[in-house]
Image 1: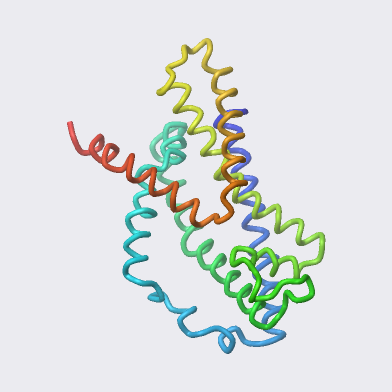
Image 2: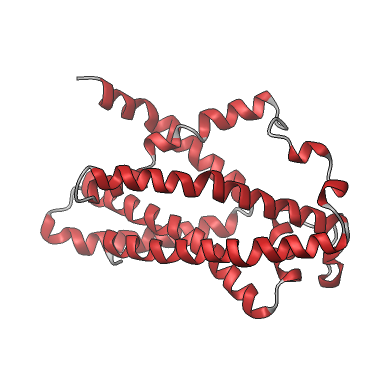
Length: 242
């Protein structure tokens, strides 16, 4: 409801919480816990540590649905338009790129590997979880719940909610802005109230969608497919045609 400035301020705080939670809590404690029991290289198959452990079909599918999202992601254009000059978004783009890859990618995958080792060695049996009956996307939450004391678990949960919120608020404000200005064309004297109301309605619809779809990765791939198939060609045409 506070507009793009509120989103940018909260995103900064959320990223700090996320980086702090991963780097100083989850990764070190996860590594210590797993290595007390067994070497992860002994438990997991070699294919888990390979960069080529993916079929060409899956790679191609992700290539055409995930890579083009960086050309059409509305949240990035939103920030470019909000920048005070051309240097700011360029600088931000490089900083974000380094934080995303390699750091966030390898930290996230590392935690996933720790969680899988925990399932293999029966680490979650104390909380009633086992590899035979556990939903795959519950692996990491169960791992953190098992290894972290209550206070640190709270910080880690805050870190993960920060990652979700930093994306959610950006998408909400971009979608609301598009509907208010482009789709409905409200006049300036009515646009603020309309924008806030539309933000609220889209937020409610998003929560309903999230509660009815339990597989996060599948939902992301669906949304990426819709955005890329609908927006990639028009955006490239705008850039490269007269």
